[in-house]
Image (cartoon, rainbow, N blue to C red):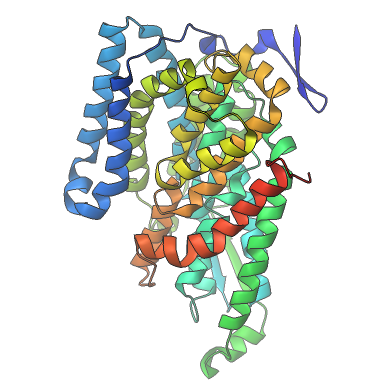
Length: 451
């Protein structure tokens, strides 16, 4: 049996991975959502209020809160199957994120020469495209240091912020590999190329406007360079790429993702980690040192998302059972609701939360791949709104998406003055990014939409 998913696309139901087969969704008590809320608030506030304590104790906080949710489901609801189901999703998620992080860390881009505004625009556009192939995390880690080096004579906070806007967030809206929310949707049963087919118009408009704004401001920032570097700027820029053999390992990861529905459980994940191990073994230490590569960023992501995946189980199930009580029913409302939470919480679980709520409105189960396919066939605009909202609004704050803080940390280490948490929001995100996101909502998801 084939199920049509729009725009001439279809998928064979029997080919869906059996480990993500449909299951009965429990109806948890409202209080069970509290560990989820507590963890997300901790992620948002603890680094600001108690940075040293948080850096030392975040694994304990994440695991402790996660165990509360798992114990409730296992002993209170007798729903062990849901735990196994989400456990598999976590393994798939962290395998993709981790392997991309490791392999991209083995590619070093050497840039000599100053960057003109037009060159910067092309670099950011390339970064937006690359983020769909190696993820926003992989692209950010691969490109942020070359970005700093090519602008080293005149780099400002503005350059770092727009890198976060475009490469670390908005750019990755075209494939499930691009950004974690879309990969979670892929794990739930949304076909790989469905995102590209439905999200490219919003991606094109947003990226084009962001690049135009960046070019205008960068032209104003561009001044006559110091005499000692004028000759370098006048000449052609020299690019050198080291560790390009890692592109083969990136290809292995992409192939594992594309074929995951047709492989036995955990085989795709094994291929991803094999590619990561191959990259580590075959990449010279000098390249890793040049990239300042270490495992601390992915370690933090792994611990925090372990807690997020566990605590979000009751949140997702409760929303799925009580979706009609939220009062959110239109694509425009879903776009803003998903986006608002994605800006200050983590956009991956926020995406799943609202996808679950949206499907609940139509009495569909987000845990059933067949019903997910039915949903995107019958309600593509709503799912597109949730997808775009989760990815785009992740750029509204440092905590909206994982790469944001990682980019800031690298820039701080390079002694670049970056905005504070609230400076980022009030000086850049609200006056520059928010109007663009509002325009996207009007053009594509409101009752006045023109596309």
